[in-house]
Length: 184
Image (cartoon, rainbow, N blue to C red; front, side):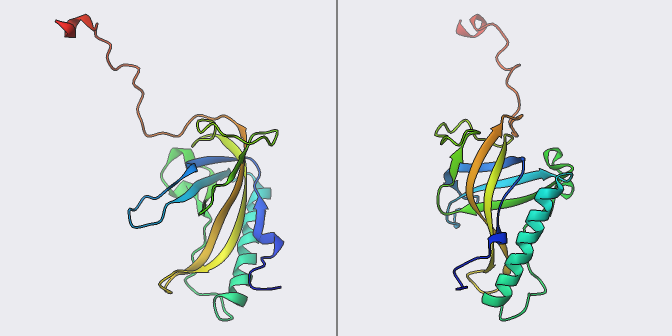
């Protein structure tokens, strides 16, 4: 195996997940100095043991790959692992879920349940349900100080609509006074 090849168990397709912070139709960066990337947080219920086992196996495979190709024969003591406990995030949408973030320099494939490409940017959003194809990989940060496991975003298959995740409040009660009161 060359250093560019990755073991198959570093790649996986999730079970039914929920998308959060979905920037999948155009690249995004939260910091001006960072290069924009396509990205999404992937939430899956703690009860989904199949996806959990796949993610844990992919992390272990990426550790083994990193030991062989990136980290000089050993796994670093302060290795960054992408899998997070949603209960520790303090966001009610993440409660009782595991989550990890995936990103890519290239636009992910985005498909509907029948595997037809989705072009409508309103169809895939934070809060919808999907399956996601990702690759786990070992890395060393550009400055050489950080080591960890990253997650590459490949493709998304939307399964169902869900309540959108948003910090925006409802505007149902805005502008309830009669317009005539303000036109005089």
